[in-house]
Each structure stands twice: as structure tokens, then as C-alpha cells.
Amino acid sequence: MKVPFLNFEASYLELQEELDSAYQRVMKAGWYILGREVEAFEAEFAAYCQTKYCIGVGNGLDALHLILRAMEIVTGDEIIVPANTYIATWLAVSYAGGTPVPVEPDERTYNINPQLIEAAITERTKAILVVHLYGQPADMDAINVIAKRYNLKVIEDAAQAHGARFKNRRVGSLGDAAGFSFYPTKNLGAIGDGGAVTTNDVDLADKVRLLRNYGSRIKYENEIQGYNSRLDELQAAFLRVKLTKLDEWNSRRAHIAEQYLQGLVRTANVALPFVPNWAESVWHLFVVRYPKRHSLEQDLHQSGIGTLIHYPIPPHLSGAYIGSGWHEGSFAIAEQLAKEVLSLPLHPHITEEQISIIVNYFNKGF
Ligand SMILES: *Cc1c(COP(=O)(O)O)cnc(C)c1O
Image (cartoon, rainbow, N blue to C red; front, top):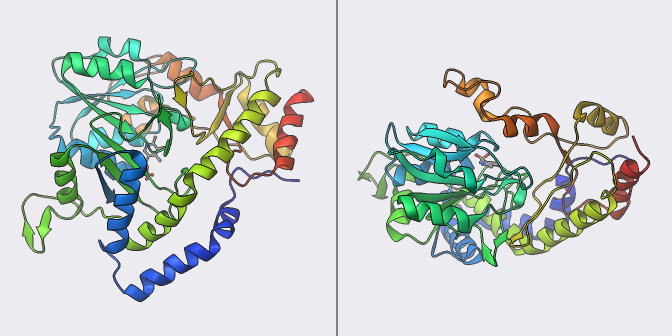
């Protein structure tokens, strides 16, 4: 039996009736951009994230970019980012004209190490952009203390962590603003691209709302130079359906993660994810570390088990940041992770049988 990394068809089939009727509702309304569905989703997702405001945008990268624009980040401003993240986190900073200043991850959680942040702060630092990587909240208390001390903004990249909690508070509500992605593979995924900003700051919310729609509040009155980055009505309608399932699907993910954690605990040389007791992960990914990753990966694929690598090249060594002065060795921990991490299949529709196949694979020795 094959174990694919993801299963989109199964997630559609579980919600087919509701998704099909959401589709028909939008088609019949004949209104496709910034209408009732987006408005309703924004209210529902803000409530879910325990924030006052939510603004639907085109994708997760734009969500972060528009937050930075709304904060009036300008050329030369420095933004602290994790060295270990998906490149979108850094690109948002670069698009806004800022300079990403990477900080190494904690070796156990893989999230930004708060103890290393202070050394990276300069006169030009404006914000800390944290990522809740693989579904696990970053150490927000420690980060917020530093931000307060240096008068910095805190932005959450919550693209992988819809519904995760830090000390019982939802991600999206733990800093000045947060960016979410609804890319189909995310815990809350659209049937295409989508994103959102959450915040409790009324002025920031207002600015992001302007920026996503040509800088316009009233048609043909353009207060500022904005962008076109709107969440579609159709995607919003789909997301409203999927939001009703998010907690259930996240708890299925947690159940699967628990089975992996218990089943793989004695596998030699395989480092398992570590979740501190103050964090409630939503297990976007189940990432193990193994020194000879390449052979493990090949062998798993030959056994019909799908895996992916998140991520094989750290942003500072990618072509996008060539010429920024970084080199092999600049961020040794992030580089080591890039060489050793491997993501196992974990999604709400994986079966008990498929999980056993993977657990047995590791227990038989390889
Ligand atoms: C997916 C992702 C993004 C970007 O989201 P898009 O919707 O693809 O633009 C940003 N940051 C992280 C950590 C992500 O995983």
C-alpha cells in the first residue's frame, strides 16, 4: 500500500456537499470580488484567532508584505527573521524595502532562538518577524519582552500554524499583526491561493485594507499607492466551510503526531520533534532529523512512502540572496537542519493502516 504525502481528494470528499453548495452560492450571487463571503470569512477568522480584525488578501506572502508596508518599513530598516524558514518570510521583508537579519533556530524546536535575538539588534532594527514553523508556536513571551525593551514591532508569520496556541492564546493574536496563508497544503487551505492579516490595531487594519485594494476606500479615490491583493469571494466561501472543520482536523493531526512520537521513539539516530509544554502545535508537518537523510528518503520512496524536505536550502544560501554577503557557515544550525530534516506524511485523512506502515518501517530498522 502506498502512503502519499498528501491527499486533497479525501479532504474534498469529506466536505463535498458544503463546498459544492458554497460554490453555487457564489456563482448565483454573481459577485466575485470583495463581497459578503470575504466579509463573513474575515469576521469568522478574526473571532477564531481571538483578534479584533482580519483582512483577507491574495496570499501569505502578500499578507506579510502588506503588514510591513502598513508599518511603514523603508529602505535600510532591519527586520529580524528566522534563519530557518520558508523563503517567503524573507521575501516579504525584501519586497517592503527592508533588510532581513537572520537569527539561528533553537536546536530542539527549530523555531527562532530568542536568546540570540538581542545580539542581532541594531539602531536600524524595526521589527521581529517570527515564524511558527511546522505548526508550532515560537517562544512569544521571550520575544515580546525583547521587542518591548527595544521598542520593536512583532509580526507573526502564522502561515503554518492556523489554530496553534501559545499558553492558551491563539497564534495570530500574539504580536502587533500576523500573516496567514491559505495555500492548499496549509492546515486551513483554500482551493487555490489566499491569505489574511489578523491584528488588534485598528489603524494597521485600516491601512492593510487600503493597501490590498489599490489604496482605495471609495471606488476611483486612491488615497495611497496600493496593490491588488484581495481574497476572492469563491475562496472565502470555501474557507468558511473549511474553518468549521479546522479544530477537528487539527486534533486528528495531533493524534497522528502522537502515534508517530510513540511509535518512533526508539528508532536510533532519528531525532523526533520536540514541543515545549507551553506550546500547542497544530502539526502542519511532522519533521524528523536523520544524519543520512538522502538514503532514508530514497528508501522510504522505494517503499511507497511519500516524504518532502522543508527546506533543503536555507534562504541565505539561495539564489535569491546571492550577493547579500552570506556564505556556507554563516548560519550553521539552519544549514545543518537543511541537510538533515525530512517530513513524514501527516494530514487529517491518513489512515491508521498507513500510519502503521510508516511506524513499522522505522521499527524494522533500515
Ligand atoms: C506558505 C508560507 C508562506 C507563504 O504563503 P503563500 O500563500 O504561499 O504566499 C509564508 N511563510 C511560511 C512560513 C509559509 O509556510
